[in-house]
Image (cartoon, rainbow, N blue to C red; front, top):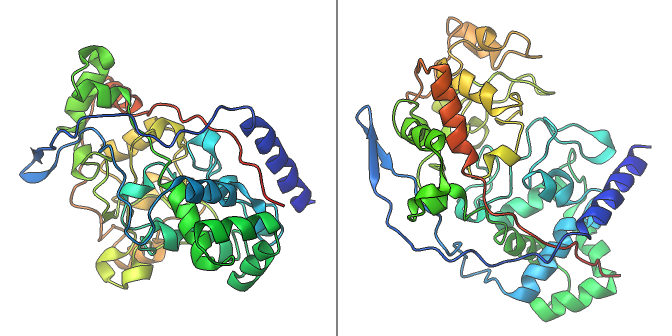
Length: 378
């Protein structure tokens, strides 16, 4: 029954996607204006600014049309999963900001993941992938969900064997890589496609490049708050609105995991307990819900949470959460969050300031990406 549900959803997505126009891999031409620095309470960080016109591409995986098209097919192809029903797009849906509108994702057999699926937008500008940064490249990230038992639940050996029996994929791999179907080629093709998924040419970009009417007064005030009183820029800085670092905000834990130690699982450093990667804010209005566990449904909830200084005491922050975040650990520390980011403090924003701040965040929505559903090889 669950499998049938996935197939029905997948077929619906195919039908809708097929009606959309041709996908564009070209970024809008923008000047590469240098980004300055901003100081907030004695801490200096890179200023926000227009996105670079070129996505960083590793020398070991150069992008070209045939590889991108192959990666696009693989991204939308459910045959990468055990049931042949779960694709990358199942959790990173183009119609929901290349993210998942569910709090946490559903995978093979109806299994529920412990974290919210982050957006694919602008991942080509991000050096470490996943909320905990355990993957050092998009290529490495692409394989993770395929073999994850809660996600696509396939094996490396079987996915290669399965795709290798498909004549169309055999021909494309020989054309693109000069080899038979192999795991590295699958990873490189998907990564090549994901580097074309870019959120840019937003109202904010137009404004900072000289189009004075691109942002209204509310958004302009909100930008000043973002770079000042609201302290957002301390973590969300640079052209992609992220420092690519890991911070503990004391986010209340929700979903199936009792506690999630985040970056600690990778580094095993005490200071990294409860720290998660700073997400990009570009097209943030498209990618709800928010935080690593999708605990906040709206930007208003996020702003309220940060306005109070984050999760000093998670039991007080969200008493309705299924599990208090790292509750046992906090109890040992007197009920407080010992690793809370020093960037956080109560902000005392007025309601008008919160409105202005959200008004600015809305200007980060990029130009729509148009595309058509790829035809799958047989």
